[in-house]
Image: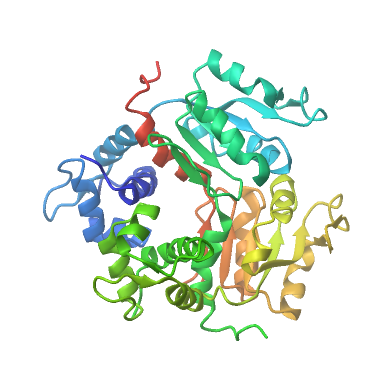
Length: 210
Length: 210
């Protein structure tokens, strides 16, 4: 059965909230409380989880640890994932320095750039490689995820190379709506979308721009 | 009536897809086609839009331009929004250089940092100010949105200052689950969540880590 993408997108949120509850020593949680923490209705949570079997008992809530373990397995959070970064400009450097990936099992194993000034530079424990060598490097080692942090003009080309070499998950920071074939998953990190859903709340109080 | 946050979060996606259709010269679109472009069911789109009144006619689809204009007004996308950036390290510099904000009406009007090396530096058309002066600067000019790009350790403190000075929308890049009072909206830019929903698809083919 095909699970709707919006359901898959919510599962990591559930896993994160359950992880926090687990750290707080909680053993059981109701869909009401979980929903209140996440801004999702209890009915939505129950429906989302029903795609994956039966969790929790009517009126007794979910066993935190068990549901967390199941979600981790469903999402593949119990594995190590190998990523390559393409684009080591300001944004790429910020991504290389981001400390949130490793604890969650995501490791950048190679970084590529087009600029002769950047190629060969040491960044943490990586040496930046020439983007010309991207395809040959990808053919040698398993890479699960490609992170694209190049300018908009070259992003589609880089994404095409990643796809050609068998990378099936792409995290795209470039401001383009990239095209990928069926079977390849791409997520765009898009601060503007986040801002636009907040201005809904702001606009009630702020006078329209002149 | 309180609109569910998940509905608000989908509206910018609808607006973006409609904007693309408008640029392609399309005048009418069905909820089926809009849904297919976005990975959302047609029923969901109809239900989301029903919170805001009647759009489109049974069997005739939506008038692209009209629905787009309505969504822009609902979301406040027809305004100019003033933002301050706190934290001008690698990530903050990447944010200052991001070209996606201005065309959508989001303008960074001030940038703050704690490091004496960074304070006083010219970045584009801004001079970085001392974060010590954040509260006095915020009391002088209207600021709609605060962008937080400081390390995790100081993020909550910066967020508290922003809230204290009346900023009601915060875009948080720091890897913390920040606390804000009711009535303040915060969004976290979180690449790990995006990765975690993609590994769901990957994990079917990749052997578990040893």
